[in-house]
Length: 456
Image (cartoon, one colour):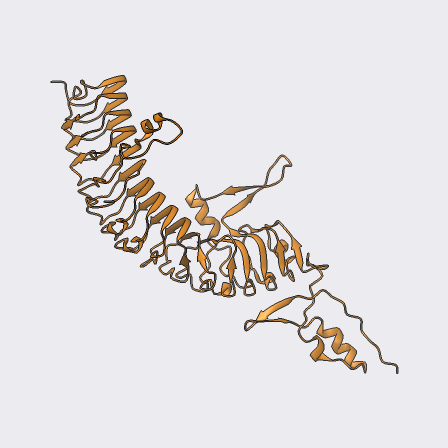
């Protein structure tokens, strides 16, 4: 009987095993059938090939043009055999998802976004839109509870443009082959993840966002000297930010940090938020910061004093300090520049008139009894002092305020106007023991004065 030959020309994909790129078997069954018919088959020649399945979108090429949006397991399975996605890959949350169909994927040239939102189906025939669930925390948490417990299937992934994962995954070890994030952007949110182990090889990051009620160890990742954003909302026990020199945004919330000494080299940050860190006792590690635009310190249960904080800070525009229950002292900002020490730039001498505090807010801080405006503060757009147990306020060298709100401070009895001469809008309300005439010497455009102590 003449020898029969089986024609096999399927698209095959390559995977990495033990750090070596190899090709796996394409179609064993037809080859073995050929062998049984008397044909001579060289398994050594084809043993590293595996055929792309017929349902795959990568039948003609292992590179798939993006963007690719996945909303179901059926759609996800069509990516089996794809090695490269030339664009974005968005996988929205859906029940009982599995990423095993992505076992051949090595590179995504755009962003990789796994979870974090659900598709909203329109009723008017328009294409689906994305709805962020971060604004509605209950809905957001519900969307990630059980949809994707594992990242198995991503073991071959080496390069992505950016990576954002919102899913109840317990391990990032399936990503241990990841070597490069082109934009240095990483976001991970999981209620059960305890560590970022598995990401040791990705290099320095310029954007890191992590969130999770059990996440305590993020030592697997490294921060660069300059960062766009560092957002840690997790009970981490330690953080290595010693390399960080400047950042656009830093947010620390729900951590177990006792101090911020790791930020000893930080010099400037546009937005700094320190909120709900139950064990934080001081922020002295921020002593070298010279420039902040927006500063918020709130709900830190063990933070007792900010008196010596920010000794070198010369630039600040908004300050919010609220609901730190044992806080007794605020920063004085001794190095603050009131504009007199700055050169007048080419855009006009009026520039100095904008050197002022834009927004100052004090709320709660039940042990704080006295507030004195820092000596170098001259003007402010808005000052809001509400819901405190302050006994006195000293405006010191503050000369003018756009909007001044002093409201619901039941123990406030003394106000020293200092240099304050004008307030455009004054709201003096519900201060039980404060005389309503205390601001009579201040020029105002509009006043709302009600429910304070009886006039003398």
